[in-house]
Image (cartoon, rainbow, N blue to C red; front, side):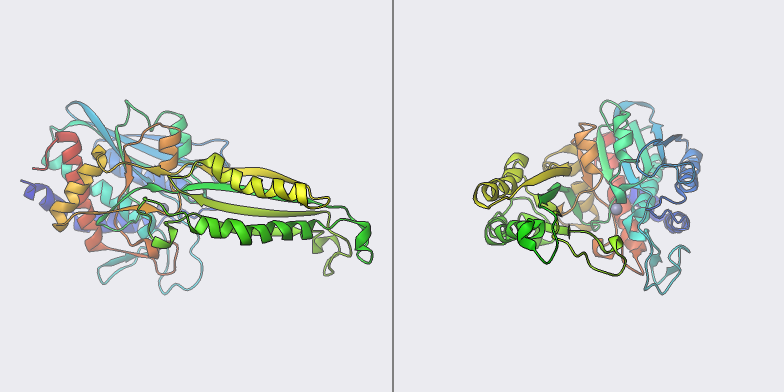
Length: 425
Ligand SMILES: [Zn+2]
């Protein structure tokens, strides 16, 4: 009998809309990390009223943290009447800058035509509000539930999560036995379960040269030409090879079901700042290239790196005066929670009850905070599930559908029921 649970969610629609709009009104823009404190306090106060114990944790010393822009996180916990597992809903409270092209005020929380508009409506204040309403409805219908519910609002996901989930995970907030199951209400669409993401390797390659007068390049050694040889080898060998690597991971969009690599930037030689408005007159003695390689569950990171260093080493043997350095900037291993994991099965049951169909299982092309929960917290029963259409994230006139939020709150409430009470009814 889920009727009471579903009705308890429906009874809270106005509250859900007001909470979403209220969260949007804090311009938690990152960078620089504006208004985290007031937004966390607003959420904490709301949960405190429901009986949650709230903690505010500032991630001092993490990137961007300062007295002007403190990285404030809130973690709220409600213990049930008897011991049992803990379900944690984690949402990031930061948003990207509004940018141009809006037809409504991005931080007013405008409600019209069944949608709530604003920066962060979809990514992911609507999902955060839906998880609060789901917990509220569940707690009202099953006040004697065993176990615990936690809800967190965390900083800095848009800039890597170091002052948010990574920091909390280091402090033990995302590990057993404190937490057993994690749902991240990112906007992956209300009938899809996101099981994880591809791996990431960012690196900087530098080729070396020898400075000389531009009129006599033969006296120097051109680092940009050396990088040109690197790029040619990438074009001829690496890109075609990556394109042939397909994964069993259900990544969306489908184009991301292969290995990819982006050249993020290339810089070489002296910049124009050296002589404002004029190009350098010299043979460049350095050139730097940044790569963003996204890899698959079927690939290991040593092989991924070896494909690039293999090319560089060969050039070193074959090309006169070629020398290079390579520096790792970031690495994240690919992640995929299995379909029979408890949190996946519980949310799948919710989706089947609410939509009368099996969920779609997807993998995100890019990473999000799940990486820290796995790598630092060693907690693997984790998914992303939430309302909102992924394509609307970070765009002008971002919105979240009220109906979508209500339906996903129902799914989350049923998920709680399955994980904490072991029943869908
Ligand atoms: Zn997000």
